[in-house]
Image (cartoon, rainbow, N blue to C red; front, side, top):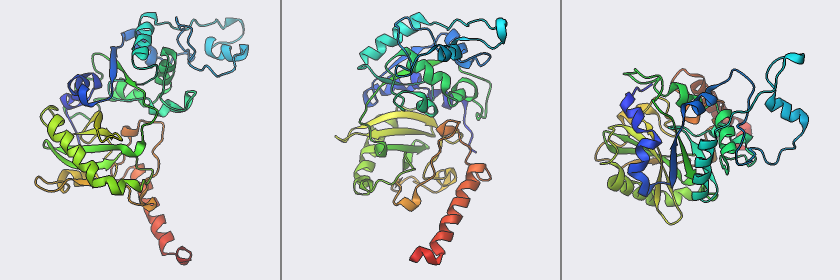
Length: 338
């Protein structure tokens, strides 16, 4: 697995890159989190308590309230008369700042910390997405996410020069919610030696036939954004960045990630990106899922999307190999031609 430096990891924090690329990104408001809220996110010593809202907002507005359910949220571990009700934590100053930002961004946002969004916790929200309209909904997603453990505890684990266990401060980025975003128009771009060497469809679990017709145009748009806005501005030599192409052919930067380590290469392999793909002077290779047979298995697990170990010999590597073998076996079988 490819290593990186702490400096390269730090450049990929949203509070570091967003101010520089604000004009070509999604509107975002960023709050530095007080340490006591970070401790709340990390605390697993007792029952799971949602914050008490000073705005009377409920993280689960559609749930049925009853005494038994409230006890699940409010009572400490213990038995009999020894069990004492726990007081839910409260973060009034932070809540009011976040409430103001949500209103400024149109009433709905999706949250992320320095590097990661709580994608693995979307199931717990009332909409099944990362759409949040209140501080309590944000707190629920952050507390329910295993993927954010990466940001809180493991961001520097793959650094060759590791001296840090965590960044000095954590930030909450609130990004404007767009209900009509199309997953097929998200792409990951790979930069090596400050040259764009590859582009991959971001959603590898679906085939979108219409992409084949737009492929060349999309590649030109992404190359133009890279040449005009990214190449001279992002200081790392090697990195990846994710983009979204709008219906009116504007390219928006969604995120930056380190080269290698816990960033998934998607339809590439890191070895070919490192050695063979997109040599300087060559045409940038743009890969999309061309058919249903090329669809990759969904990677929805209890760890973050970009925190999976897929290197040769790993469990996922063996899974993919077994899936390929089974596909070839079925293709060769007499029934396949029936």
